[in-house]
Length: 359
Image 1 (cartoon, rainbow, N blue to C red):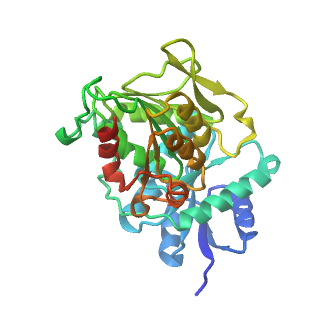
Image 2: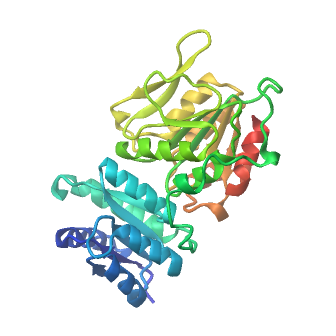
Image 3: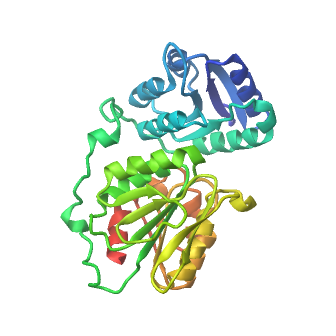
């Protein structure tokens, strides 16, 4: 029995199938067991080959990637990595795929694969290996039948999760959340439980490229009682508003006067591995919200956020990490837990409640 991660590559472009397959085969831990030209072929090949991971193009003829994903998650759930164009339309399709149960996505660099080969190869291999260990559950056709904005409209939070009135207790005033792989679904399980009078501000870093973060924030806003928006330079940080860091830049908080704290964006990404970076955002929160910050690390690959959580804890803030059993990928939370930086390690379903106790 092979210990290599077996991958099925699905793309309607013969060139992309060849390029992606060759990239993956360069890694001794991966074996490409087959390819498919469309979603219909993909479903057949999954049944025949039983791959560990599928890379799925979004836009294909005969059957597109979203429909194939919908059927696979209802009948034969397995880790699927979506491959989509770096456009606004591609972003919306990819977000739909994540809601349907796709583990992660890989932006397709449309402008000729040659100029971005090394970067694409590194990202592809890393995400495939991470996806192989991801937890995937069966999702019914009903669950995958439409956008959450239509299915759930501003849900009321359970009575047990009512926040304390503003000023009733002296506690944290900003919640800093960091996540990566699996983060979109995790955030959808947490933010809708915050009541409209949530007494703290929220900053979110979800690893996404620039075209993805705005539609992602808009989807969250449709689900939540608090306001959710993509952050822009100069946004005032205030209670009841969640600001999502834009893709491709670094987000910090800065004091502009005696009262207001505003968002500052660095447009060059600063040469860091992640832009936006959880560490960058959380470090700035620790500086301005000493003793009044809550750091939350959710599912994700890598270690981004560990140093930010250290900074928040070091200034007497509170810290929460998602537990291993409920993470799609137990990477970012694991580094925090192993470093002894988590005050609470809880399942995803309990994180909103823990935050509301702390604010």
